[in-house]
Length: 91
Image 1: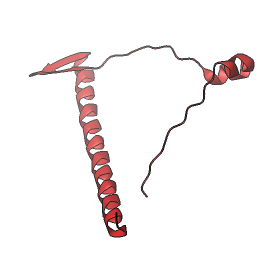
Image 2: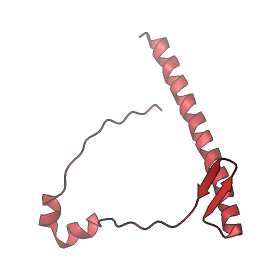
Image 3: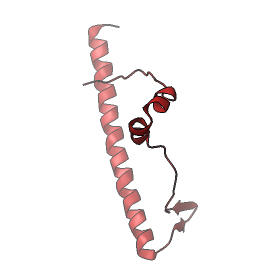
């Protein structure tokens, strides 16, 4: 690919990411409005036409790795695995 073509592709990718972020922000705003209405109605489920919204508390357990490393570092080290991934950014 020529330099101009690469620049164009990077520019398009950056613009599409910006648009996706705007769309995500708009979706989150709409979701907040729906949650506010559900809170106002004091319901955890809301049906509107073919759509059903559910807004309820969920509890889950999660290992506190920081505390484990502080109190039992040898066990934490034995069960810690390294992962690697590729990061791509355009700035």
